[in-house]
Image (tube, rainbow, N blue to C red; front, top):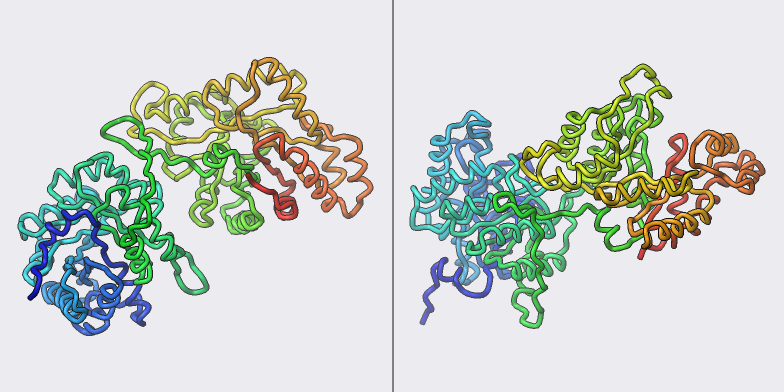
Length: 625
């Protein structure tokens, strides 16, 4: 006697989530298929290879198996001269899954007809008309439906409008089939055209998608936030999540995905706790990942994690999860932060700077600060340098943002540009006067002082409006730092300025370089006397590894706010040719002394000698709490 299989919709209604399979391309590549091959054509020419992948996923407990038809539409197949094979390739894809299910003896597995983007842009951002796109989707949907797919799965779409056209085509072509609609999001958790998860979820649910979800893009941690935003926007929707195995890394000559099966097992429970009804994997995931997820979902002894609601900006139409920067997270957790100042190159070639940043990263620096035209010398834009660091090294940066030389119109436009480039940490400062640099006749005016700009950023732009109260579309999410000189001659005036910056929303301060740690305690005591409470603002104290006696004398005599004790000057003088090493030893000792007084250190290497900063970090092996 055989038990009748539940329909896909009936299975979807059961309490236990449906576990899907993982990557197809990753597994085919592991079987020796080259990357320039048309993977979908293998359904016809090498069906046994495709079936073997399906069998592996079925063997570890996957219930929903995707056809190898992701790119089997007329536009993508045309690149391989296979335009006339659309129907045949899609039918063969369904048949390969059916044979694999039959061979496995499973009676609880379902066939998902996989459909990806067309690979062309739709109007108004491309040349393809909406009706032509629907026709292409309909051609693929019809073949999958006629071959016996249980559900249509649209995945890895980055254009919300294209995905809505695909859903519409599914309803018109195969109205009885359930539809799963997945978007993919960039690192800033927006689509390619800037749409937010909440808007995507609302539109797809309204369009009639049976399941609304997210796949590809990033790893489980990012997709968990996106899924939460979707669930909060449309709590009645059925949702799903299929993350990549983390962000790919180049190891030797191979692209490797870092996330392990155990990590995926943990996030299977996270996704279930959020409310996902379908859970699986995308690029880089293998049967090992799916097997680990299966074990976790089937183990009643494993408790579901507690899910806290995401903070949103409060606008029902633009809800976006608040994503603190790593700097903000570490400051909130009271961890000791190490950052190093980098000066942009005086050319358009960033390779040496990137190599220096990598050195600092390996030594243990949490992030880097990128100065803007230090000492008023012409250099590459710090925005470009920060962008290079964050995209090429995955190293968070703090953008120095001087108000000098910018009017209020340009200031706000520049901030929007910085945010668009993914830069979220700012150090707002006056900036060096142009008269000391390469172009002493250059314009030096400004409309807004640093303390006022901090208020504009925190109380205006981070609330979604500009200084004039006009909407900027979405709130920015900047973490903002201010300058602090604990060693100012007029300490009370400095404290008053600091209080104004704090009232305007400063999140942290970068302190003037210290050579007498005892003066930090003097400032903190005076601040408490004036303010009536201890200083709560996190301070990253400046620290300059001295390079030579001449360097030390210059700082001591010509830089306001810096005072170097005679004992340290004597050590530099006695060191002779070994002065750079002695400077590192002095910096190490100072760092040990200020460790309990501040929340971090802001290393400022002289003359681009970043290896000395690395020695300070590496040799100390600072313990973080």
